[in-house]
Image (cartoon, rainbow, N blue to C red; front, side, top):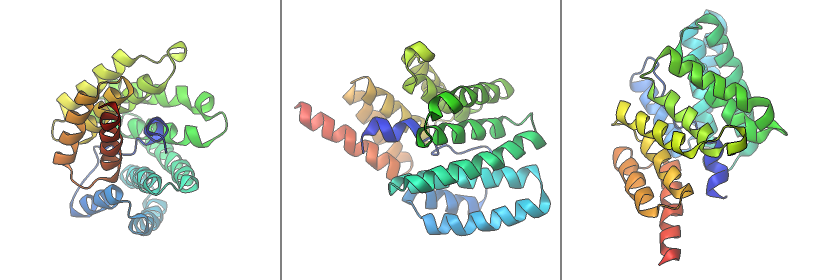
Length: 237
């Protein structure tokens, strides 16, 4: 699969600001290694709990798990599963936004899931692109220190044609802002590597993806980007 295609909608690598602990750490690792079965089991439990409590926290957590499922499914190229997870995640995130409209994390997660659904629906870019952008902008407005929101917005800047609001310089600025806000996260480094790959700066791409791999070894998405960058550099020599 071409790098630009997978990168354009594999935005589930974000770690949202939600209550964390040993369980979520393990589930994040399941996302990293593409453990679909573990995530499916937990999503079933999370859906049942959200139906019972109808709380903001449980709907946000459910949406987050669907978001992580998108990455796990993408790592094994199961596009129908990506679509299903994105749709279910959007439904959960919409409830979270309704319950707590001032939550930056909820708006960012909704933006992220909309961005993942768009490539899997005919005309999805036109249908969901602007809404995803608006939700990301709202997340940043609500919390200017939300690093994940800057990544989500930067992805839109990077892959949207200039005629429709794309801006590679803005993408670089927003990815860099995310890195400054959360320097221990691998996500900004992965996306900066993708940015440099798209703009033909392979040495910079190598530096960023190697840092991402150092911060979070074994993540399939990071390994995929590393392989693509390495292949490109080898072909150029």
